[in-house]
Length: 481
Image (cartoon, rainbow, N blue to C red):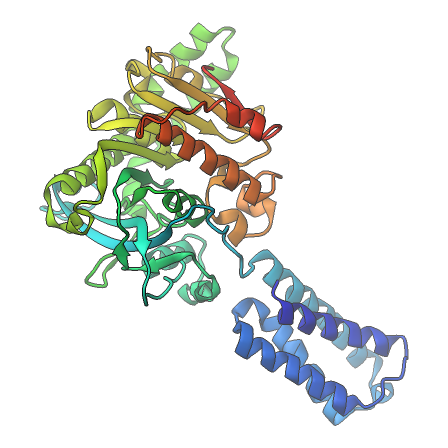
């Protein structure tokens, strides 16, 4: 909660208590004037937001009462009771909403480089399988984050309209409820020149039905240390995509309902029951082998893998990325992603020879991994899963081959601790985060990602296992399951 928000709510909370205790408050008009000044300072210096509406209502009502000075003693018992109950409910909301949905601060990047971004539109030659319109081809928006040379550029707003409207629609909220995100200060500048130098390229893939660009805490830090990150927005499977012509494509619920049907639900249920009842690892594997490859999520993972390869195709041969000419270090490309996007990173690693290393961040590895042998460096970074959550990944990664493989856990984290969500929604029962300080989780994750790609894309001498000691009690690292 911001400074003047806190003072405003503190004053409107304290004044009625003084009244109930029958403490005489002198110069009521002066008090009203003071409260009005705090309100105006908040509006002009911090900016209004809808979460503060109950607080505004109480403050304006209190100013009115202080100026009018009604005789409380002459009110009927019913009127007093109604007023006290109404005041209590509105005041509770006045504190609750701005605390739970704060104007949050993003982590300050620790690298030496400033950060820029540019939105790139890609038209692929692949048919679009999600829409029902014949002849549709797969279109993608890519947000390119890069080390930047800052002159007079503006800091970009947090999330574009497509991400915002889609996120609001996901939870049945009107679009205007996301307008307060204009108050979030990012560390990224819009469309500056790329700074001098050459940098390795990473491709990032988001979680299923999540905000594609809602990973500022993760990506800004990585870019500040000298990486170009191509952040894909998987059309119709993120919350929303904003295209250059102003068109917005939200998550396609029709496709989801038609394909993620009863048959898929039964497949997942039956396989999971057999997995939980298995008496040994071999029986566990038999229970889920087909599920890992045939479940609807596996189809989506393969589509996202093709999206990543399409982006690489355009990076190599199209004009969209010409602004990066002479700034790409080498042909080595790394891929990482969160949740569904993490599984896509694993899938493209085994499908596309141009991808040299990959990281799956807390995603179940659907797709072809279970029948493939990993011959390129790979890291799996997981949250601390509940004991009753079936661990399919120990079988998905059963064929590790001779390449370096890392099984990493960040303790006391939840699935959302790799996104900006724990900052955006400050209540663990809703945001699916663990009880770790979100900033500690971001720092640990970013250190792992940077060290991993420094080692396997930049050929730097790095001992990733040392991070276990540096983040003692937070990170655990194994070479297998």
